[in-house]
Length: 251
Image (tube, rainbow, N blue to C red; front, side, top):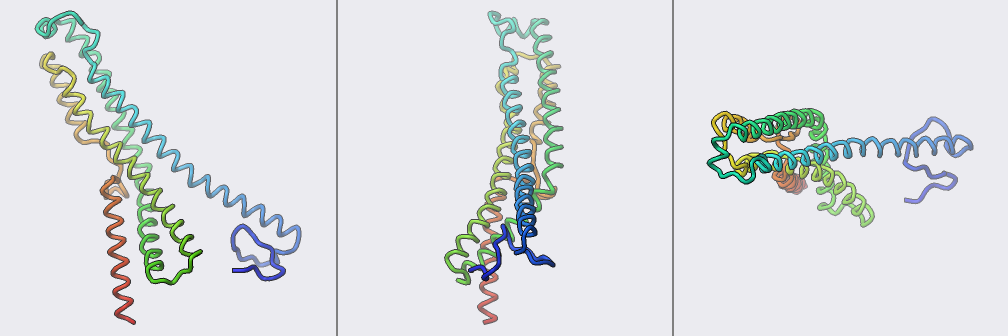
């Protein structure tokens, strides 16, 4: 759409109670609108970077924890036989010391994961709703042939931007869940058969905590993972089909 003659273009359409074509009002308003857009972008980006950094940091810490558990006996009486290690008080004591460090580390990571879920749960709910509504409304507009080529590109770009952001959040949450639950596999690879009852009990408790895994939820109701992405897409297509059917019946 062409701009009316004599009207200066602004970064985005706004209504004002004064004439925006007069200097210096035009320059001041233009500067304020640009600042507003920059702050909006940085405001949205802050959460994205904070969430991404937190999940990746937590995944890295879980990888380190799993390596510590797998190699918990490395360097302790390396030339002794398995039977000598089992009956050695020194070996059992050193392993218990290392295991205590691993248990404390794991407890801190679980607490970190709960705090991350509290931080992101409500925002992910809004992101899910925005993605779903954008897909349904814009998908209905596109399938109804009510948009020209330029509008189609704009609508697709807007929809994909919102949905891609939700996909990135969910994929990272799914990766975090997988990393947290595979701590159980690390325990199984820790030469547990060399340990006496006290260490095995501690490993059993660690395994029980690891089986709960770290889960990022959407509004405290749904787990944010790869399956949720597919479910949202399927429900969006179902809603578009329903809207088209209702429109045809009314027509």
